[in-house]
Length: 75
Length: 326
Image 1 (cartoon, each protein chain N blue to C red):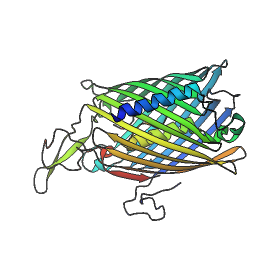
Image 2 (cartoon, chains in turn purple, green; image 1 turned 120 degrees about the vertical axis):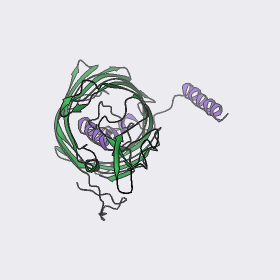
Image 3 (cartoon, chains in turn purple, yellow; image 1 turned 30 degrees about the vertical axis):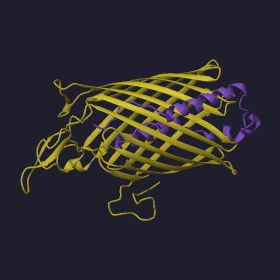
């Protein structure tokens, strides 16, 4: 029931947004800071992939880091 | 950076401190591309070394990324790591391991309107393990480019062998398949703040234990014996991560992240991290603190009361209760 209500709400929200497009509240000319390379989530992909791999070798947790890899080196 | 397990109080080092030291030397030449959402062209050479949690990982890595025309970007990466572990297993069964792993990957990103399609292939080889992974992803920016949604899928085929006295055992060959589905949303909240939510489910099927490791069990008041590990043949994990990044007035960025993990083997993991990025001229200074904690898998035990005590037996330190501050 709750899922249906959620779905209904979601479709209403999507429907409403289709009729009146959402105005971007951060204007293109205000995005200088956001566009700065230091604001990227994965600024240095190889060292990040490496660090993720190291953690995966030692820890059970995996995933949702934004990268992907193969093999483990931990048998 | 030197750190110690001390329940998020970095100034007291507990006696059984697990110390994680990560050293990453990276040289990178990146040329900024014009306003596009394709990744920027770059050439990176890196040497890395990590020492912590009884594991040392080191090696070089090279990445080259080149644009072909305005819509296509191609990347190739070569990565070697040398993993060596002198774990507590050494005291009971011979499993200190030294392993060299070579990884090659090739990927392409195609820009089409407000979407980026990615496709790639990764091959990872060790003397006793070969992994082939193919992945596909799509990301789309919405609502005046304030929101980006992304989906990804990967499939991995793993060929597992066993070395006996340094030679591959011809009678031992096992398979493992991995599939991963990921979804993410990143949202510009204000002119200085961006938030990203990522979710990933990974499911493994096949041979999941180590071909080498054993578990210990009690045979008498002072005696113990060893038997092979026994693992389930499937494992499914769910992970959700929320990250936020804030632009500070003096041109620096602060980042905060949290990830929750759980899997069908009963492991729960929490990861929290805090980062700071500060550019000084041509250099960029990055610092981060990360705390990780996990509960053990349901079937993990350091010492079992008798032989064949349960259907599943493991003494893998990866599945033990563990926490670490890096």
